[in-house]
Image (cartoon, rainbow, N blue to C red; front, side):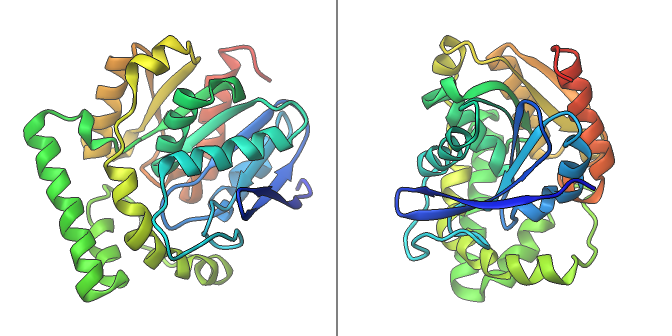
Length: 272
């Protein structure tokens, strides 16, 4: 098993906790909501034979610092991701973002394309890409979850939110990971949730920036709203949409399949 080098990158008043494994081109893994770098640990170990794999805890999540009393913006998340990439040897990376991490990848492609060598956008829940009736339905869902968190607490909000995910296991997490991310749940619903789900990608700018990319969906995600959004995104961007094995949380529950799918995409483009 490759050794993980743990370090912190300073950016805009926060220490961003990072884990680095292996050698080769930089591969940055951006986690989604209520998670941290631990969701990628097993997959990162598998990818480290061909890449320098970097995962990190997003600002105000787990081992990274930041002001947890203010709302987070996607722009801030993208600047943090860029700071992590620039702290590595090449200043440019293959970027893989899942869920909320995929939205951060889209913002990077819009505002800082120079740090991206290739981008994989996995199941980005950009609900504004849906037809107007569906977009309104899921926007109401977001508003209801936000209100539930305010009046019933983060556990009630998390339960209802997780029920919208298709075929994701409802199994206990390892104790150390669960202990770390427990504080992320309340922060997400109070300060990140609406920013992610209100995000509208700038399709024209991403295309103009000529970012090399694919979108990806999970085979077991059926026709979940985040599958529909990802297909719509691929059609608008004119990029390939590929199928990965598994579901929305494939990186944690099916790390070998997730790592293999990433390798296949990148091998077709000359990596590895």
